[in-house]
Length: 300
Image (cartoon, rainbow, N blue to C red; front, side, top):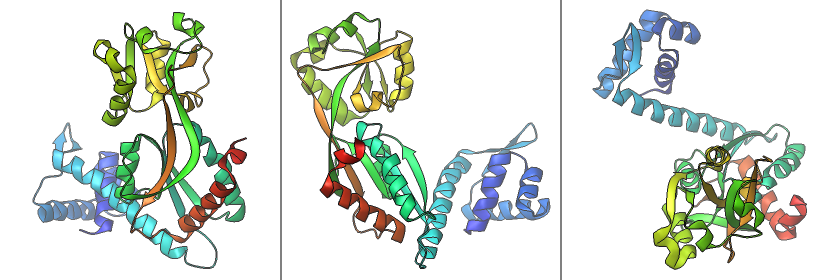
C-alpha cells in the first residue's frame, strides 16, 4: 500500500467525485479509477459505494480514511524531522493541551522559541487527557499538557508547578452566583454537567462523599466549550476547572470554586523510548530550563 495511492484515495473521499479528484491530483480519471480498483483488490474490500452517482465511503472506506490520514501525517512528520537535521532548525512541533490555566504558557513559550528558531512550525491540538495520550501513542503528537487525575506511568513527565481549582460554571444570575464557594449539598438538587472521563468522575464522586448518590448528572462533556453553551441556556451547572473557564470570557457566566476545595495539578508529558526530532528536543530543553527558573514568571 503506497502513500501515493492513499493520497489518491483521500482525494476521492474528500471531493466525492472522481473527475474532480483527478483534476486536483493532476492525473487522468482512468488512471485514478484503476489505482482505486487495485487498492480495493489489495485490501479485499470495497471502499466506495455509489449513491445518486456519487462515491460514498463504505465502513471499510471510513476506517481506511482515518488510518490513511494518520499514516500521511506521520510520513510528513518523519520527512520534516529528517530535513531538520540540517544546520538550520526546521520541522514541526506538535503539542496537545487540555483546557487549563497552564495552557496560557504556550503563546509565550512559542513566541520565545520562534524568536530563536523562526523556521520551526507548530501543530496545536486541544483535547482531554485520554485523547491527547492516544495521539502521543500514535506518534501524532510530540508533547501533551494534561490535568490530573491521569495515568502517566508509561510517559516521561514534567511538573510545571501549576494547580487547577475545581468549581462550578453557572449563569451570572443563578442563585448560587451570590456565594463565594459552593458545597456538595447545594449542588445535589441541581442538574449538573460532568466531565466525560471516568477517572475524573471518580474524583468528583469522592468529593461529593455521601451526597454522591443524590447527584443529578444531566450530561457529560469532554471540552468545556459546548458545556458552557448549555449553561448559558440555563440547562444546568458545569463542574469544571477554573483554568478552562478563564479561556472563555462571557459576562453571562461566572465560576464559583468548590468547598471544601478540590485542586489538581497540571503535568507535561512525552513518550518514553521514542526519539524526538531535533526541534522538539530543543523545545523540551527550553521548557526544562523554564521549569527550573519558575513557570509563574512566564505566566505573570
